Image 1 (cartoon, protein in one colour):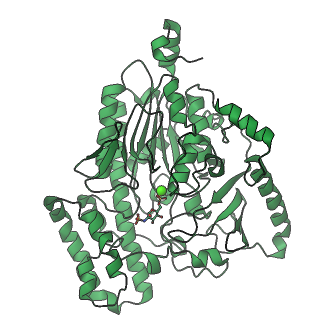
Image 2 (cartoon, rainbow, N blue to C red):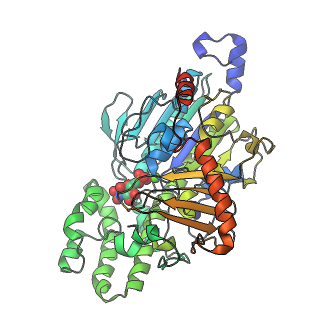
Image 3 (cartoon, helix red, strand yellow):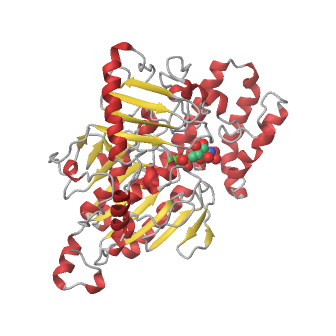
Amino acid sequence: MFCVLSSCGPEEKEIQKSRPNVIFIMSDDHVYQAISAYDDRLIQTPNIDRIADEGMLFRNACVTNSICAPSRATILTGKHCHIHGKVDNYFPFDTLQLTFPQLFQSSGYKTAMFGKLHFGNSPKGVDEFMILPGQGNYINPDFINTSGDTVNIEGYVTDIITDLTLDWLDQEAQGEEPFMMMYLHKAPHRPWWPRADKFREFSKKSFPEPESLFDKYEHRGVAAATAEMNLLSHMMYNHDSKIYPETIHAMGSVLPEVEEYNNGFYGPFGRATEEQRQEYLPTLDSINDFFRENWTSMTNEEKMRWKYQRYMQDYLGTISSVDDNVGRLLDYLDETGLAETTLVIYTSDQGFFLGEHGWFDKRFIYDESFKTPLMMRWPEVIEAGSVEDEMVQNLDFAQTLLDVAGITAPSDMQGESLMPLMTSQGSGWNRDAVYYHYYEYPSVHMVKRHYGIVSKDYKLAHFYYDVDEWELYDRKNDPNEMKNIYSDPAFANVVMEMKEQLYGLREKYLDGKKLDQEYIDEYLKSLD
Ligand code: SGN
Ligand code: CA
């Protein structure tokens, strides 16, 4: 029913003008504990919070697979990973998969993407893009542009991505056609280099520790105990905690990682100009002085605590810049009068562990990595200050955005539009559990492959490949997921019911189901 603008008659143009703009903001590894709209113990994020205060905060949003590129592919295609094929960060995205920006573009929307995509190839369906190659860099980053050229831009990545976004809006946003813009931050992804002023500011702060910082993984299976993401054992001194390789050399052989990870420090920091280096050096020097003088006499418990604080200072320091820049964008929308007619979404590609269970990174079905922040502001439709507790997934985003724009979603997309929730009607929404599947093993952080089901009350997961273990958590009574109750006879019925439901979901989403010819024919037809 919507037309490409060049072929529009006057009536259709009217309809087109009434279609909202969409700004999809996504950060990389930004967990809900680090957004004050969810939890204000670690950081204040007044600008990001504005989206929730003036719109809707989703408190039970989650991903289908807690890792970057697979999550982005799910967001863009509206399909689980086993269908779109991007099951891990390594294999390039199948560009024959249909993504929602292509549908926006062919329906007359102007489209653009700035920041991190991490697909191994360029996006389809966007008129203009500037994307970071792979993971990208914090300091003086390179970008790949629409013509496929690599350009270097001096400055701090979060500011630059915002500049690109605002420049594009300045040139394109006031025309007849609506726009769909993806504004995608690298921050707060590892190796957590804040801008120099934030580095200085945050290195002086200290943060409350999570209850499970010293988890010994005693009441669960082998997957947690064998994962390589413990702050004490796996977080790197040079690469992560910002200890100079020279400091460690000078301390002798107390830390074995030094040779291997020299580049972990000078790779990112070596990109800085002399002037930029000078801004970081006083803070780096004082961190290194402390380390040199104290490290060898500290107990393991003290080391863990120190590493946690260093980690939080840097991770949250990068978020502070994201928040400032989201503020710049929201102010721009206010000043230009675009705020009223624009749906603004803030989310992340997954959650992250901030010391819970002693960990950093993500990948697990456990709450900190499984859940993801989600908030939406759309003044014309969403009531300010609303809160939503239904279980929604990144699988739903494509259909939601298409619905918002009045574009028919392809029938093989696997999510559901969130519009009934956004308009507070609630009707037509009926989901009591979601499906999850993580594949990237063996790989960095060594989190074993697993799939599972999550309802509001329980979480059941099966770890497989080189292990065959089940875990069940009682989400209401054990919110920190400390005790696997799978073998507790008192929960035998719950296990049975959850398994049945899990197999139902696997069948519904065609995971593990033998694809019969009828399904394949139907699927191929839907791609025409
Ligand atoms: C890099 C990180 C890992 C991280 C993966 C995936 N190491 O390899 O810690 O798990 O990316 O992250 S780094 O120090 O080189 O950044 S993801 O968000 O892209 O999935
Ligand atoms: Ca990520």
